[in-house]
Amino acid sequence: MSNTVLITGAARGIGLATARLLAGRGWQVSMLDRDRPELEAAAPTVDGAIPIHADVSVPEDVERALSVVRAEFDHLGALVNNAGVADFGPIRDTGFDRWRRVMETNLDGPFLMTQAFTPLLAARGGAVVNVTSISGLRASTLRVAYGTSKAALAQLTLQQAAELGELGIRVNAVAPGPVDTKLALAVHTPDIRAAYHDAIPLNRYGTEGEIANAIGFLVSDDASYISGQILAVDGGFEAVGIGLPALRS
Image (cartoon, rainbow, N blue to C red; front, top):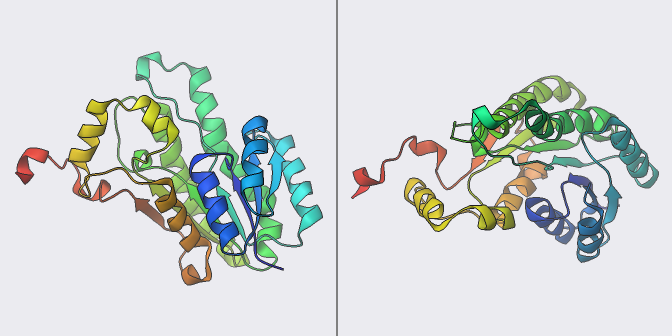
């Protein structure tokens, strides 16, 4: 049997790109998403994928997803906690309902999923990759809920690595910088894109495939002695701090 992976938020974007990458490498892929129409459209594009309609923030859905995977496999080679919610707005306009909506998916979800799937991951020594964000490593305007949730997910990654390593489970995170997703293309104005290009040493956005490649590395045997790491895949964005474009001229 090929290795097995469960990817959350897999109906689009980075999750779908990762599903296609790993399926192409011979992995048996389970795709979880709470958007049923998008999942039903995406799953047939991934060779042999098993679609699971569930919400990672709902404990009952997580347990149901576990039952589906257990019925198919006796172990799980990797869990990719990619499902996330982006909500950008000023602190003063971020009500508690908006705060909780972000936290329950971006933080509660990876906690619930990793906890539930630990026995299957431990069966043969699996890997977990949490998809956090550069917004969890450096502060930015309008991201009080999103940035805080991703910073907390980075710390959760370290906690999971510290404890689950005893079971042979590696836990790492990927922190994407600006990526050309449909969401980014929809909400980033030309001025915003130009400002990001000026601040990023590689002078461009990343692609979904580039983030998928980083995830693919961390779940592979090539990363067999890597755990407890937050890998920024951001074109050098975090490294430069303020990175004033005027200083480069």
